[in-house]
Length: 253
Image 1 (tube, helix red, strand yellow):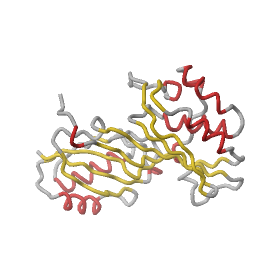
Image 2 (cartoon, helix red, strand yellow):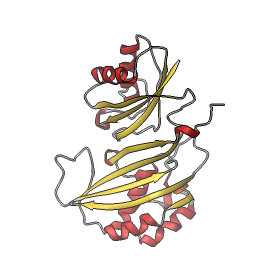
Image 3 (cartoon, helix red, strand yellow):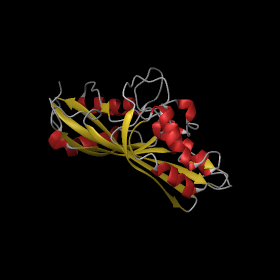
Image 4 (cartoon, rainbow, N blue to C red):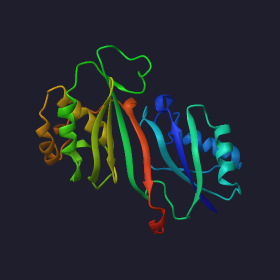
């Protein structure tokens, strides 16, 4: 058996998330169908992140094992011949047998896009959250920076979840404006369920003056979901990159 690491880009607009579900169109099912057509057998893939319905990816990572003897470039070419037009395979690489797309990850980068203008969106209607009232990006940036470090992020986790460890190490939490677009970037060793979307929803409340930037430590300390703001819409979220240290991946136990 050979283990492969697959990097995918996709538009999540028409998918019910990453994870395969009964009676629903998902990214995992589409990729597994493409692999089955190539390998002439069913293959199961493991994704680095279970993106929700409507969430996009610039660098989702998946891994799969197979006995089919094809070179990485042959897998890549064949996958893009079989995948739907809104999913693209960017790379395929052979990796150690104990590589696991989810559990071997050392960090993930997410971006959330906010279109901040008074007019409705046409081109970005399924790619960014339109916030019509002006946002104070300086206050939002101050609030975002106060979240850096290792914390219990229970206040930003949506229930229900089977995750028993609410601690994450947030290494990047910053905003930048590009014209009418505000790009929120978050990098951490791990993320909780809908954590980025809840972070953004809370930051938007700061930007609209509904809560002070200094409120964020209090939200963290509360360790309670009602202490934070709304969950931002899924369609503004992008999984940008998943990082690995292939030289230090421990064998599976």
